[in-house]
Image (cartoon, rainbow, N blue to C red):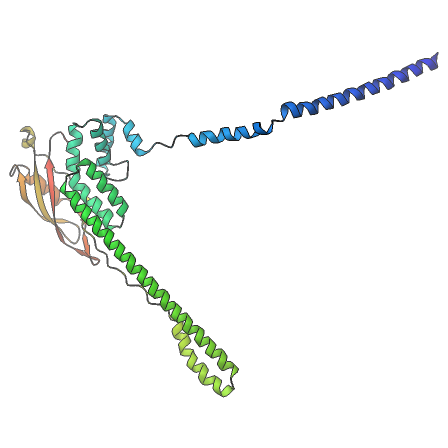
Length: 334
């Protein structure tokens, strides 16, 4: 009886072990099937996320440009930014953040805005030296941008004709200087090649002399030595071009509006002629024309006399020059 029970127990343990093994195999097979069918994505599904990520990059909107920023601003915001730029003497630069662009944007939204119209008239004579400075410094693309911007403010202003002529002359001068540099570089390279050839010939003569009898070696070596010295002499430096530029305003003092003229609602303009000395100060400021006569003359000359300039340079030497400026007196300006 005991043996029979033990036999039954062994049979039960064997059956249990077999069943456990079978269950384990089934679980493993199910796990593998689940990984292939559920967890592992198909090939086309694996590539879909990549395409889905790339699509937003291709269709994403570019950052808003300065033009878009100006379009989204209100007239009051544009006027506030324009006055700020004017106070900081950002008349036509930098691009997208200067007084002229703000006022032009105001007129695009409100063509009859008197603040913007008056401000642009007053800015014009002071923007001219800024453009001239860009031309004199060789920033010709920037000068072109500033001229195009001023043309939006007042396309018929005669100052634009002068500025365009100066820019055209600067472009021709830059082209001529570039050609001269290229020619000088070509000459320098040719001279260096000649010197290298002479040095090679001298080295060949020296090598041939070293293989000759001793009596012939000494004279040949001595003759070759000066040629080698000449061949290693550095090329002469290119000549330095003297600097030339017009006088450039660095401190602009606006004129005070005469009290009596303001009370009488008088407006007008004054054309002042003055000398910018070699140290950049202003002397001999005097009125050559005005409208109405003598109403704004004193205010205009007193303001101009306090201006400061970088003096004009002729062949690198500070030189006194005579300039003319037209100052406008308007009520209700920007």
